[in-house]
Length: 314
Image (cartoon, rainbow, N blue to C red; front, side, top):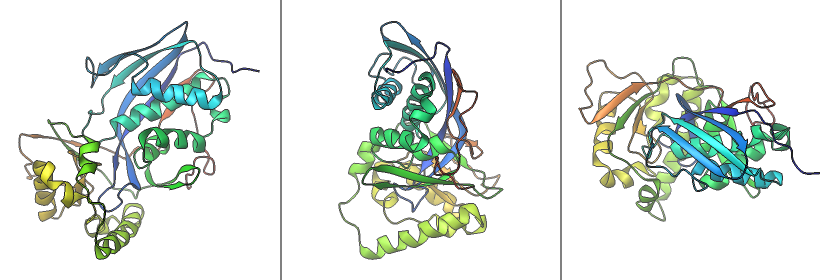
């Protein structure tokens, strides 16, 4: 028997994310309270996307759009595609700034597809949704917090990505400093050396472990916990303004890091009121999203995730 698809529109809100968080390269991520809102409905014979906000007039509007590509991958995982889908995207997450815009599109597409399939949230559970999203993104550090919310630790097994979501301590209030210029993950990764000194790897292992404790239990340790030797210094020459802002914030005691591959800067402790990042930067205080990508409409009111299925600790 083939799949059945709902006739009602399905919507999902996908949070922005910040990955790495300093020492947690390709493993740690945080969901932020800035959202893209996506809506989809099954149509007759084509896959079309309408984009509002960030990326409007620049992003593809057909099957090559990342949201549609993620939907198609999810439909294929389930075993059948609908004849067509109309998608509307209201984008608020800045594109190519290190805040997880591609992960938000991928997770949004996966969740929309699950919502359009009758029984899709059970047919493709959250563990499978994470594997699909990470396979499309190439690494799980952004898609995990986007899907699950909170502070996530992600890793990859032979059968795909896995993650756990932890609740940050009260009072963790991220501030992002977003520049006007774009940054691209591929070029940032190209700056990384094939090998790093053993002492640097050891340093980061300790700081990543400390960061898990600092974010969930004792934020007073966030400054030492966010020190990094694996990726930020290697990427500094390619984004000197970002490196300078991180250094300036850390010089006044702020736990600041490069957000993802940059060029956005993330501060995890309070920024002094008189700190001036410069006209080049737009600063915004955000909260931590604790729910992840939420599905509404179709056959579900809200996609709640149990602690086992989602890999989320209670």
